[in-house]
Image 1: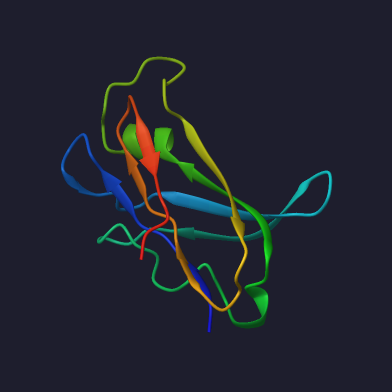
Image 2 (image 1 turned 90 degrees about the vertical axis):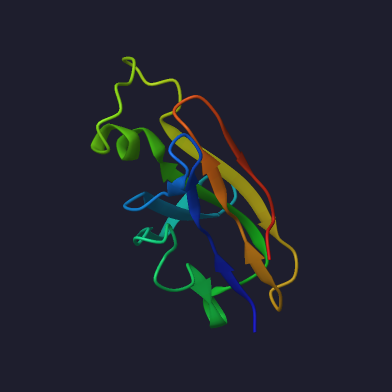
Length: 117
């Protein structure tokens, strides 16, 4: 059965991104609808899949990672406004029977993502 998972790595400090707020949206034509949210645990992962079962369907999705908030809460001196604030990752689910893992590697100055395993 398919599912959607994520994790966050704080590449500036070489540790998991614990306490990162994540919101998940599904594309509904001309707008995105909020379908869930989570906060990463001490390992930088969510305690369970963001989507699974009947809720995990083909379509276009958006994950928003509150990276600027995470770094500010960690005491990092950020410019105003921060260079990296909300990281928006738009992606598609083509096969609802597969595992989609969307990790975020982030620092106050850069980020990257990929389809993981």
